[in-house]
Image 1: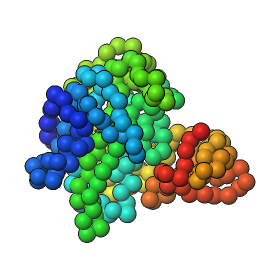
Image 2: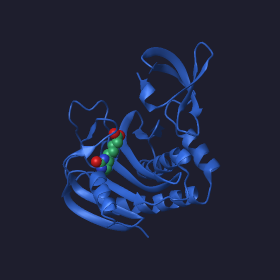
Image 3: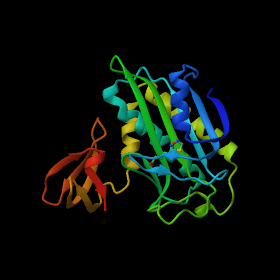
Image 4: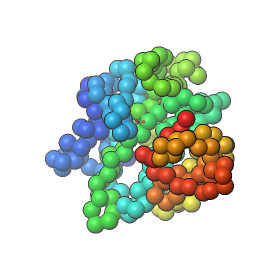
Amino acid sequence: MIKIIKIDAIESTNAFAETLLADRKIDSSTCIITNNQTSGKGMGRNKWHSEPNLNLIFSLVYFPDFLLASNQFALNKTVALAVSDLLKQLLDKENIFIKWPNDIYINDKKGAGILIKTSVQYQTINWAIIGIGININQKSFPEYLPNPGSVIQYKKIEIDLDNTLNIFLAIFEKRYNQLKTGQTSLIDREYLNRLYQLNIASDYIVRGEKIKATIKGVNQFGWLQLLTDKGNTIECEVKQLKFV
Ligand code: BTN
């Protein structure tokens, strides 16, 4: 069972989880959730925007000491699968994709973001803070966001957040157990099947250069594998590739 800590308002659930970990005041399998995240962290230098009381904003704390640091991307995949499972369940008529490395798309809009921070000790993962923002009932978003989407834009009716969190946590436990019991080929297969733009030729900026290429897969370290229109296979890490 996952323990839930609910906080009315907080700057960032990820930052709060880190403070609790530093003070050794938090156990594995804990979810910190807030109604109002005032300074949410996104990937890189991005912020995560969410209006109060409308979306699911939480961090899961786990101690996956069974996982080698070199296999950390398997955790990213597991989380991306769990979030996409939830969106598939809520929006069964839409296409749900995982946009590499771990954004969750509803058709061609970003419906959820994931930010994972880990600590490594003796080559295995000591703790992981898995920050998740899922846009649920927010109808409109600030102009500066490139392509936000939310469940209500497709489903048209408001969704109960507490209930949806419980559904998600059950899904997550199932997925996490797959990881823990070594079902990595299933995780790899499903992650690949959901990958946005898999096998579709498209434009990318790779290490500053615009190229036409096709996504073919992801390697063990989470690097994206592409086949260029010149017939070369290339691998890039997150900072080296931009979707155009
Ligand atoms: C991204 O796509 O840029 C990642 C966004 C992650 C947002 C979540 S919301 C809950 C948790 N707390 C944070 O400060 N960020 C993550």
